[in-house]
Length: 279
Image 1 (cartoon, rainbow, N blue to C red):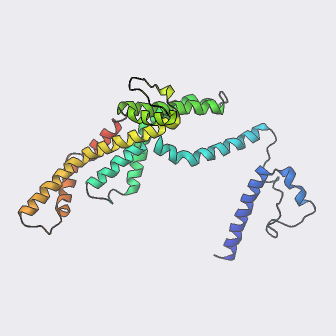
Image 2: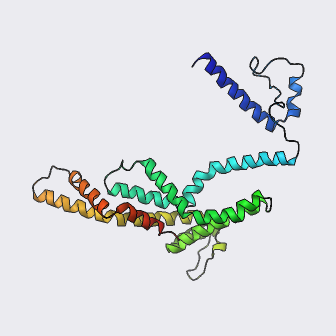
Image 3: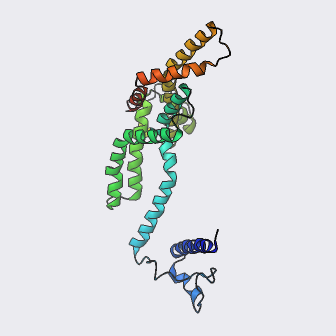
């Protein structure tokens, strides 16, 4: 690293420190430390220079509100991976595609990046109605200052809860809900007791949804495995009958698997089954 590069990196770190100090400490508190000082920010980095001429300060509640909104947005961005995996259709789609790759005996093809991209865009397509409802009922009114932040979060969570409960009900995996609900309430639930969506806390619904998605994904993966397993068995039987016991059956069955998958338009069938497995 050259001297100029190191100095530039040092300047960036100083500016970042200034930004944090301007928000947390405020210019009114940072100014006394600068009184009578003529040392620049590069000559003495321990001093905090006055940046009021560079960065505008919050003069009213609107500026503080904007800062808090940025903080909330950054917090939500850190939770997006968890929300994407646990509360959407992403998990089921990715598991089925990964099992398909294993069934074809091509663990490196398609690459993981392609499977992740396909799963992501399929998730956006499946979640489009829910995202539209969240946008119309929660995000837009909140940005227009029509509802509070708490009300917006409740409305958005309501739509996500409805999506998760529909998938559990469609897969008939209510026992997962009863499992976590019994543990949360510390009491057995009679079989004839009806449980509505409003009676299920979010902390119970999310793990029940994850279990339901895992079960549905592995059932679909088992059905995808069957035709490829039949091809492996047929090829292995033929090789044994011909006395070629030292020849790995995978080397012979792989072209037939790919040929069968292409002739049957396998990608179209798998994606079609994934899309219509959601309600």
